[in-house]
Image (cartoon, rainbow, N blue to C red; front, side):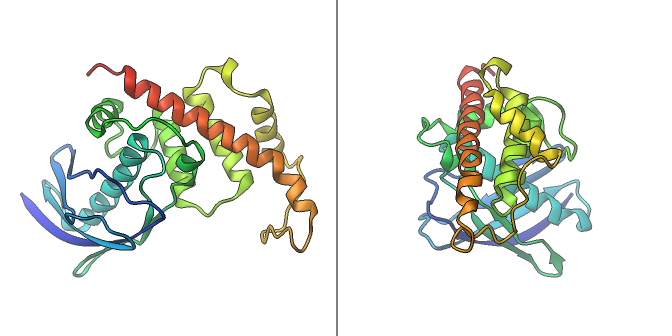
Length: 237
């Protein structure tokens, strides 16, 4: 049995969670976290321990995975409640800086606040665990949400990833046909090519070109988060 200790400095976003995740189990490895009593922005520090049947070189990956799970669990319980930049240190053990943007969950607000224990029970039933290749269905939707959280905001990427997530968890007849058509048009280069600056002060056409994209992304976010919360409420585990 091995034990490795890390400290995570979290620069919180606009919101602070009211609940925290204190432990996750990944087979023979457990990750535990000691959060401060008061989650007061802008900066909090969390002590993280990785213990169990784990090799030294793999310990940082479990610390990273823990915070990916924390992001999903807290935002499924209370959409838009947790995000920020997480810097994890562990002596000579190196862990990448992680940035999680909860904008997709915030776009889906307002949604009901669920009990974190119910979210955790449902999430564990998905058995995502340490899998790095998502299985079809719910796991695919969750990984798409993680990609959007870890990436800078881009309207085209939002449409593509949210359309994939919607197809994974939303009934086909509830998905706007235009969302899927636009996803295909983006994938095949049938939409206007927009400069990466995306600055409508330089070219006002940008606002008109992407207005529909933004509206569809917001709709898709609501559908996906709503479908996931519905599954959580209906789970009997």
